Length: 285
Image 1 (tube, one colour):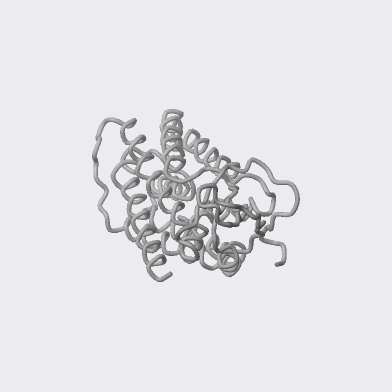
Image 2 (cartoon, helix red, strand yellow; image 1 turned 90 degrees about the vertical axis):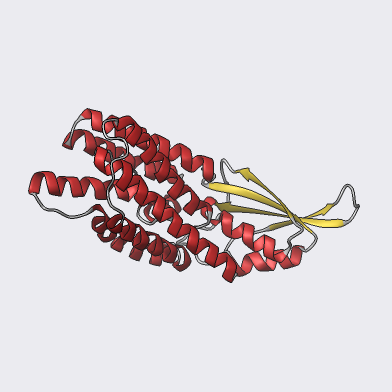
């Protein structure tokens, strides 16, 4: 598990670096806004500078905005998930403050919007794929999704829609449209790197059903259905474990199963709906 956690730690830092590159090399100069809390921090910094002549950096504002969200995540989402969110926010703030703002495409706002969205999507996507988060809206969306049992994307869409409207009202409609381009590219890249479905069904075929079940229950609070199975080629007895997880738990599940039975086979399918009991955060174990 140490190697696994070390890899995740490194990936979170790399993701924070890509997010910082997205802003300092592309979006900041073009005055185009990113998604989530990063976009909120950008708009807040721009308004402070342009209308109140208060010079405060995007990195510092991003850090301040995440303080109450991190506390919420610690109480409602989970300590492990929140710790990696803190690491992501801290390193992104560090990179934003230390990496100089550069002009890559001086007069082409569209190029800045597209590549800003590309690098931002890579940063967020790889962080999510390794079972961590970039803080901010990730945590809020997870809390609201568990309380209301609605797709996480609904809450992302709401905040990002507010960012687009704010960009249009504070500056001009053109900036809002370029911000929309950035958000679209970011979303597409995240979907390409990491599954976009909020709930997934894993079907694990293993010869060590008891061991895998115990390992999953030791690390996750999810029900498992054990179904007898038989290998068609080997004619050996197997078990198929069926478990429904959220997308944020997928990477953890993968590593738990690999460690318990390296020879197992797992099929992941989209879950479009659930009827009956599915544990949410506010329910007791």
